[in-house]
Length: 394
Image 1 (cartoon, rainbow, N blue to C red):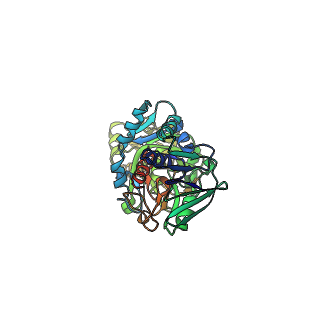
Image 2: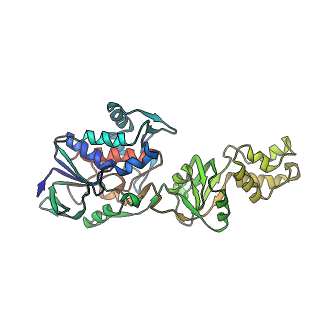
Image 3: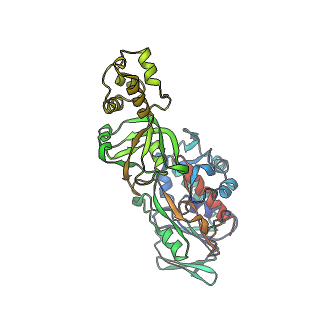
């Protein structure tokens, strides 16, 4: 049996951050990773350049059954703290858009930085670790992996959620949580493309067309809008705006898209006065891709000069353009989801330390927890912040 101060299950973003911080505090840490190398999901993120944080990261950018849960960890380890770490390692980066920070080079730099942060004499990373059993024994935790036995007073669940199963993602974190009588908020795919059926299938002919839009999803207090690009696909809708609202969408709810979000309800009526001989598709082509403009004009049924269209019909068309509803029949599932909504219930954990209230010494961090960020570096920031929070508590 190998004795440690901390056992971390998972060498992803949260697990590596936690291990590094704990190791720097002089604790002996074993990190058990079932993949052949650490940080695999980091390596594919941001198109291989890793959108490692967002300078705007705050509690309002996260979804959870408890919207206040993330406040403590995010306040104690901020986006600027991680930027300072990146700078200390001499990694060049740039802001792409909306506060999103990317490596100039490769995501491999972030993984190497995290590994370099782990003191060799205190942190041992074991890859290809097939965990076969986890148990609580006499105030400590025992883990069996590949026939070897590990024991520590502190055990950290950092195995993520089931999104992107081809990367080895599973629901192992939830199995462990249930083993220790922790509630799990039902997980579902998030930051995921939406699929269309019914009459909306006609829009599949626009596959590959992208346009800036305002997308809105969610009912009541969940109603949220994002101004980014939407992409039509052969299955439905994708692109940053759609991935964002997918986290707020629930089955049998419509989403709406404003194709010309700057246009008011009277804009077509006003254009009729200014340009009575212009056709709707001609006007739409000035701001939208030709194929999209033609498809919208066809579906609105206005294929004549504006001067020959009634004001009532133009107002109706303008309102439709500002609130074009789609009824998704599903998502592309965990296979295409960037992250998972749901997970280990925050009601079971301390927001300050990430420790399970029912099981002293048991912690859950990162995507395993019911805290899900927006697209754009927010989920990495939660990994850094929650991993840091746990490491300060051992």
